[in-house]
Amino acid sequence: MDKAEELARAWFASQGFSKIIHEPNGRSTFPDFLLDNSVLAEVTWLFQTEATTRKPLVEKEKPLLDSVIKFFEEKGRGSEVTSYFVDFVFERPLFDSRREFEAALEKALAEGIKRSDGRTRIHLKSKIWIEVYEASKHFGQTFVLGCWIDNDEGGWVREYAPKSLEAAVARKSAKAVSHSDQVSGRESWLILVDRMGCTANDFANIAPDFRPYTSLVVLGFNGEIARWSAGLAAN
Image 1: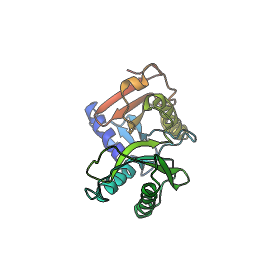
Image 2: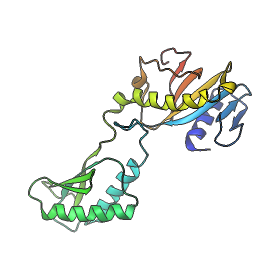
Image 3: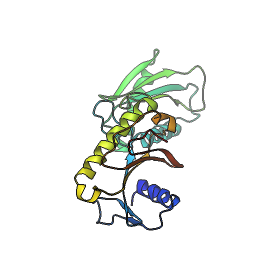
Image 4: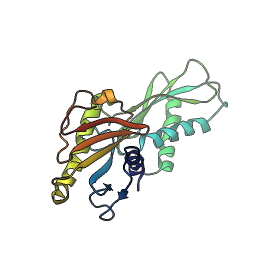
């Protein structure tokens, strides 16, 4: 059971279901849950989708950000009199390993300082680059993260939340259709567990087509964000 399913299971219990069976028909088969021997439920993550392919963004941004911050903290803390802001811009695919990434970053930073005559752009890979520029004061370490831009995101979360919802529903609806013998005439829920930081306002005034499911629910880490039933607007 993955983290999304664990969160969904806790939510099912909070809704009053007492018999919650995970993968009643076996691993990786439909449905993910059977609730009180009557309700079928499928669970998946709600990721932001890439701006071009509409595929879910792979969850690599936070580990990448953590690596950059840690790298900056370890390189030249308090040993220089000058600090440099570093803007980081990237698109996927990222590096295959942290070692490969850090070697490329260290080389690019050295080049950025050497060429520093204003704002200098250095590519780590074809679609991953940094811009290095001198800060007006010393921050206690040589490198300080400036802006952080993920070009695959394509825009603000609020703008893309409905599109990401639509993509996630389409993927899971196709799975339900392929098991129409189980779904037909039964209550079935699709649960999307948010990884985008959405709020109820992000889904206001939209009415997604989630057939053949009878209900669609978006959960956050702290509970329900939005719910639709029989094609009605979000609660």
